[in-house]
Length: 63
Image 1 (tube, rainbow, N blue to C red):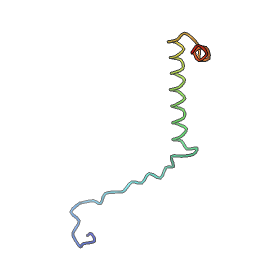
Image 2: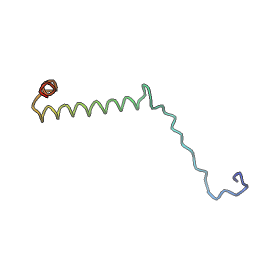
Image 3: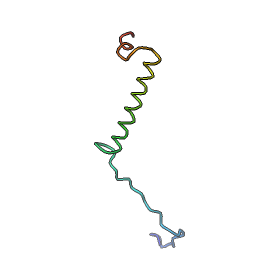
């Protein structure tokens, strides 16, 4: 029954899910995110070197 005295029409009360995993600091989530961003940066750097036929330092000094 609810606060008005009405009968509950649902068979099961819905369970409330609270995510208590911290998303800041040195957590597994932060380490995964940093690793993925580092992999994206490394592959991007390789793509720039292949496309421009220069290394990163040479590419930056030629601008």
